[in-house]
Length: 145
Image (tube, rainbow, N blue to C red; front, side, top):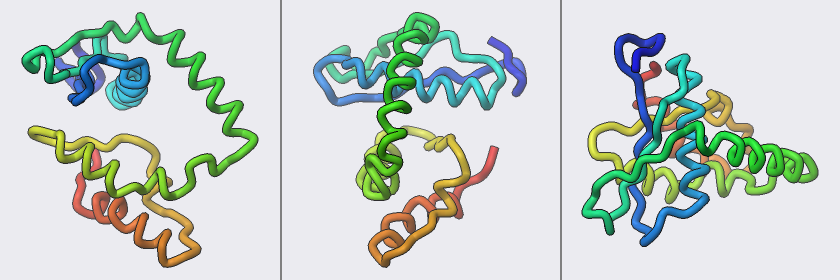
């Protein structure tokens, strides 16, 4: 499907080690698909998850089928988060384990999409500086699309 980037477009694919595809995985794929739509100007038609129990054959989900579910959960989370701006804090956002798991599963390329704000953290302690360092280094080595 063509997009503003050319005669092609991105569809989100992720690998999981779980024995079944869970609702959290679908939400994660939809979030990535929403971000891809912002970059390419068109939402992907499908999103895919590759679990090991299918002999690594992708399971395909239509993005439109999960739109209402995603926005319902997102609205609920935003309202719940309004009471506590730092629900997870820097430990969650800058977890080196999360970055390591995400990039080690990539076969060819690792794409990190999102706001540039996390790459300019306001660190108040040496621990926070260590947490932010991995993501900031990733940004230094990465190219911007």
